[in-house]
Every structure is written in C-alpha cells, then in structure tokens.
Length: 182
Image (spheres, rainbow, N blue to C red):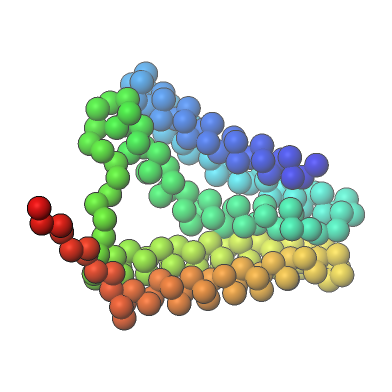
C-alpha cells in the first residue's frame, strides 16, 4: 500500500509543479503559481507521515519504506533545481524563452559543476539517512528496521562512488572536443 502512496506523491509533486507553472505563465497569476509550487514540500511531509504510520502499525521496514526517506532527501536537496529546470523548459515551450539546455561544460567549470552536484547528493544522503535513523529509533526494533540501516550503507557506498567520479574531474578535467575543420 505504501508503494502506491509513494508513487502518488511523486505524481502529486509534478502535478503541483506543472499546475504552478501553468497558472504562473499561462494565466499570469504569479502568486497563485508560487503557492502551488510552494505546496510541493507538503507532499513530502505527507509521505513521511504515512511511512511512519505504516511502520507503527506493525509493518516491517522494507526498501519501499526506505524510498520514502530517500525521496524526501532528494526532494529537499534537488527540489529547487528540479523546479528551476521545469521552469526554464516551460518558458521555452510556452513563452518563447531562450533554449534551456545549458552549454556543455569543460575544464574547471565542469569540475566545479560536478563537485557541486556531489555536494547536493551528500545533502540528500544526510537528510534521507537522518530520516531513516529517526525511524529506526522511533520504531525501536532493530530487527524490523534492518532494511533501513542496510539502505543507509548501500546509499553511502553510492555516495563514495559518486565522490570519486565527481572529484576525478578536478584532477583530470573534461577537455573540449577538437572542432572539425572542413
């Protein structure tokens, strides 16, 4: 049941984003649009509450429950960036704005961008892991919440791999491809 709620929350997140941008740009109601965009964290809050209630009712923690914490960490760390991305495309498609694709990055600029991306990932990991540890403490049964501690470890390994890749560009910068001469 919680899996469906997580899927519903992800759909609700994008519905609020699209509705907010539509009201903002197509109807010209900037305050209402911002209100709809600001409602996206409420979806995250509902998700974590539903997860805790399910666990308090006796459910054994699973990967699905853990995804709720990951979702919240990612939403907080990347939410503004995701909404900005959608905003740029919305302006391009419906308001004739400039093309939203960023220019390709190379050298120090690319390395800096990759390091910032890793820092966002680290923030997401800290928030998501924090929620997982709070739920482990709240439930108070390590046997029922083992999936959460396993998930923190697996995500931690992924974070370390991301660190190695992201920071490798500092030592070995991405070079701009040679331009073909005709």
